[in-house]
Structure formats: structure tokens, C-alpha cells
Image (cartoon, rainbow, N blue to C red; front, side):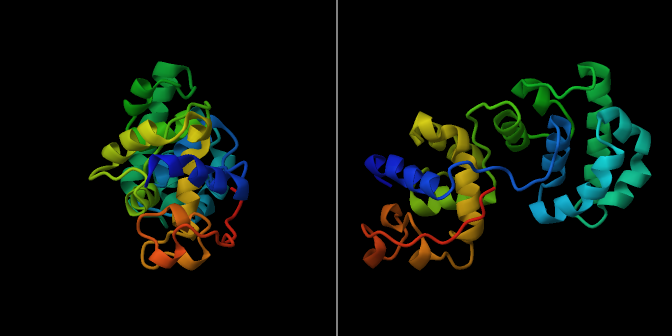
Length: 223
């Protein structure tokens, strides 16, 4: 993607969805952290389904610890890797209580020291909860960044660094939400909806006849 096309690319996504938000359901920073931890290799929809019952009885790290490992596993058993995720979640809660006064830290180093919390999860929390212009690269963003030519890279970290270098600062805060939603609903893995894509004219992989033309955008959920 030409550098001159990057700002119009994001301006188009912004016009269609001015205030994007995570599709994970949460009411606190802790619930956001827990939901993102649970969402690895699982859909947001499947995570929301289990947290709707789990979060009301365990809305804080201390309450989650009181619920205990067996009950947490029982609540989340319908999502992938639930045993490992439950153990990581409980250990994270223990560290939050013992080392952070039950609060979610806002430094990358402290977040990534928590079990089950990698760079992607830390980026989501820093961005969504604390308003930092980080970009969490999931499978959707990795695909969209490579397919469009926005920020090609062989690894998620390569793509993240490319995006941070190329995305204009005025779009960086919401960039990962726009890209996730675009990948989830338009630039899909098996068959991208190029004929309905509002940003096809900027995309390196779009059919030649769509480049440089304006398309009626496919409707993307606002959040």
C-alpha cells in the first residue's frame, strides 16, 4: 500500500465506524483483562457467553480466587484450552491481589509478567482500558495488514512494528479495532468481500478493476 493511501484508508474506516469498541463484554479493567485472556484461540462470542455467568459472581481478582479453580473451569469449559486458561486466570488473580492491590497494572512489563498475558493481551488492555495508542495484532490484523500491503510482516511483532511506523498518529488509538472488524466482517480469510469493500481501492490484493474506485461499504457492526 502506498504511504499516501494510508490516511485515506483509515479515514474511510473511521467514517463507517467513528467510535469502534471491543466486541468482548466487560464492565471493569479486570473483566477486560480476564476476557482477553480467555479469548485466545476462541471467538469473542464464545467468551461473552461464558463470562455473562462468570463475571457476576467473580467481578474482582479476590472474588475470582474465592470461586476457585474447579468452578471457574466449569464456567468456561465450552471454550478452547479452558483448563490452561482457568489456571492462568486464577494465578493472574493471585498476583494481582498480592502484588498490585487487586488492581490491573498499566505498565506493559507488569502486564506481561502475569500468567497467560502476552504482548497482544497487554496491548489490548493498554489501548482499551488506558487509552494508549497500542496495536494488538491478532489473526485478523495479521491477515489484513499483509493482504492489503498496509504493514506486511512474517510475524505478529513484525506487523505491529510496521503498523506503528505507518499508521498516522490521529488514527492509531482505534486502528486495531478498525482492522479487526474489517478482517472479521469484510476481509475474511477464505473469501474476502472485495466487491463490497469500502477500502478496496487502496488494497494491494484487490481485483484490478476495484482499485481506485469507490465502493458502497459493507455494513460493519459498530463495536
